[in-house]
Length: 85
Image (tube, rainbow, N blue to C red; front, side, top):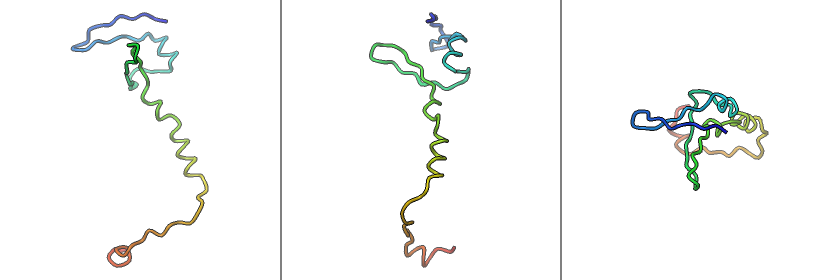
């Protein structure tokens, strides 16, 4: 556990996060964080990038999955008469 002081920064207040905590949390300067306050008044910082972790693997799994069923014909009269292919 570390203790930090709130410091005035323009019209806002900031804290400096010790490098040991950044290392333990696998964070780097410049990362975008989401900040929330829970019911107990605790301030929670969550890296926003973590929501997207694994999305590429999931996308690739869907793309590689075998497609089942028939392809539905979605053509319409406009496609047949007016559209130039």
